[in-house]
Image (tube, rainbow, N blue to C red; front, side, top):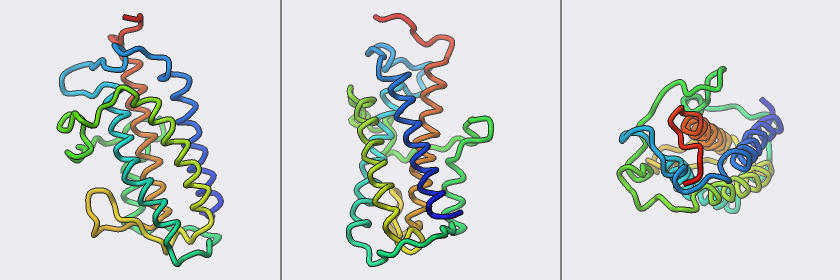
Length: 194
């Protein structure tokens, strides 16, 4: 794909996430934000807190790399590495906007094991991180997305091409927004204020 197509796709999904949060999640009360369908599932606050912690790592890594990379010249074509393609494809939603495979979240990013991640303003904070991500994507268009690399959050040894890392993060966000929608659409989700 061309680099401009990649950038447009990343921006489209991120803007869609912002719009969805505004339409569906920003109006919820505390009972709704903390509701779980069972003991093993996450609440909306936990989903968004997980995303915020994830963003905290990747946004800092992206911003630092954009500022410091020696690969300043953007290329017209972006080609994923096999590792990068495998990483972001595992996060990408299926054709029916469904979550194809479930993964265990690393403990440091999992609110079940790390309850200190959960904040009461998780949804509004996520919206801010998505606005920040739009700015990062715009700046990313000015560097070589094939040569600049980003260490993944769970291993500093494994590095993805910058473009692959952006796809991974954006698809990860979209995946968890679908998880949040599934919670919201659950038949037992509390619909009244309380």
